[in-house]
Length: 435
Image (tube, rainbow, N blue to C red; front, side):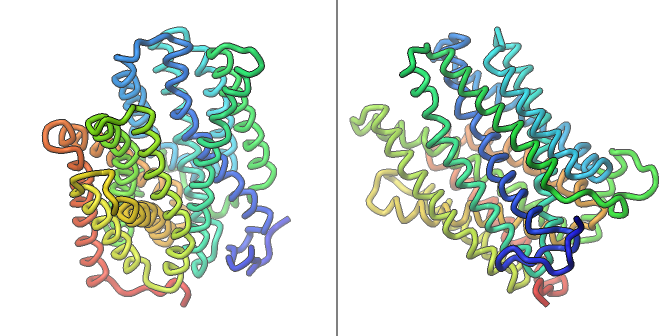
């Protein structure tokens, strides 16, 4: 049934054609999509150790190779898949992507060699690229402009809770299976297959509950996927705000990678140097990381509310400033276990999630309706480059300068995007989203 103009989900004003059921379906899908995309990486060490028997001295480089495989797949595919979202439709691509990663979950613990596991990770990444571009496009379509920031903030908070659900709830399933007498390999395999079942269930929910694609909103003519991608790039040349959204996507993923990759490594090394055991150091790192993430979850709806009441580029400026300061104060810390570290992590978590929300809201506002999938695909390419930049440059700086160097590096990049945002804000007309 078509949605009525002006339908609302609580305080969120929905776009014409989007019902409350459609919006609730999307929020459910966003929760489980991010949860299931992140959970595979969390379970990966069990597959490497218990299933393939890879020596622990080699697991770090294998993990890097698997992560690099996924980012290469994203670089190759997200642009064309974003254009395909415009051509084939959001609901179809979201449903197909979830089913695809479900098959990836089934195959992952069946890989009999490292080469097979890398090939399976590439296969999984195709579905991840579909889900990522389709999810971002549906998020851009669903709200009226006056509620875009709020919906993005609520979605970001739910995605964060989804990641925590995977880490705190799903990750305990192997222990339950071991209590039933199963070995490590079977316990991990059955846990991943439960993840596959959740993928298929979420795919069915998306197929039934997301809004139907409107053929009138699809690109007209017979443009190829590469032409649609090129159009997404050209559109940014004439729209500084959209170009800023691409740059913000680059740094937002870089922010997330720096804290996710280098923070635990830094604290483990510092903890061992101070006489801690490895589990104790990792527990401390987990506590600090949790402080950052929980602060970000609380802050996300507040930032969304701000984005709906002020020019969104102005809020990008605020987000980049928070991130630059947060990453800088953490990177400059002499002792990562210092008394002020929890406060620094709260500031870092606020800045980290602010960048993600600011990028999504600005892109959704500026992307032409018929090209939203293409625009989100180009933004995902920028995000993949941000990951590769942060892992490669950050890793070199970590080894050759100081453990806090990756944080100082990404703080500098945030400061550069802050300067670009200020320039865009001063040279382009102000936009009031709720006007």
